[in-house]
Length: 389
Image 1: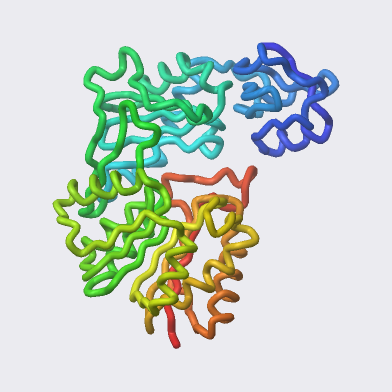
Image 2: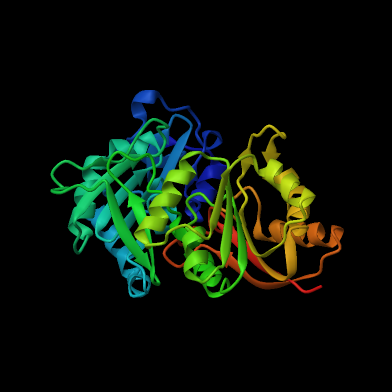
């Protein structure tokens, strides 16, 4: 393998287990033709680690053993090791699981999801995708069984899910998965995304247990699966607000796969801030509220940036909570830490004269391990708070 010279500071990082190679770590910038190459990282002639080059500005460490042969056998072992860790998760009441989670399982830039036997590989950068032939062969060897294998180039905004040639005898456009008695329709062949955040599983579980006989408001529910969980939990009404037009189609599929008629729903595709203003003006109150805070969104009422605008948005939300209401506040982004989310939530509700107690906090479930050398906590996080005033 080719040797790539790195700085002394980078050598110390990688020897300590840090996996992400950045532009500042390279003594000489790499060329476009090198993207996807397996390389040995060296510092003044001292081999440091084995890696691959993901993009022109960096890559990912695969092994601290600089002499490691990066062949099919190496990746097969890597996949099998991850799959063994998933055994307690696969025994739960869910037919969908994250089998492989990027750098936390040893290969940054690659994830593998199993949707009831339909296995989707997601490539997060062009470098790892260039090694797809080798990695898919290793994956097929490691998987105990599967129905069809698919891939998605996540880094390409125009890409859709495609069947892996020779590994998808009967590719499906959709597949039904089941989670603790709730069904979800997963989009596969030809879709831009599967349509369900698997990491929301613990939130769906708690929501379903706490909606019996209650009026529920779901804000920015797209891909969370929370609407079906609330309705199957016994909600007497759900009001569901989204800004994405495609959320309406996915919600109809969610209802159909659970044999729900939608008669207890009010669905609105509209600006979030516009809805909050409307709900405050009409003094609407809900006994359960869920909100998925994005890192950013643009609307007629102005842009939203989670780091600086979350508190103001949560202040508006506090006005909509009935006495003893349960509120689930989540975000799938690493732009806000759990500590910061908790602080902004406490300040926002206090500003509106509402007292809350924290019932639980959420992080990614066990099949979404975190590489703690790379990040302190999972990107997905959330709080379950209850109004006590």
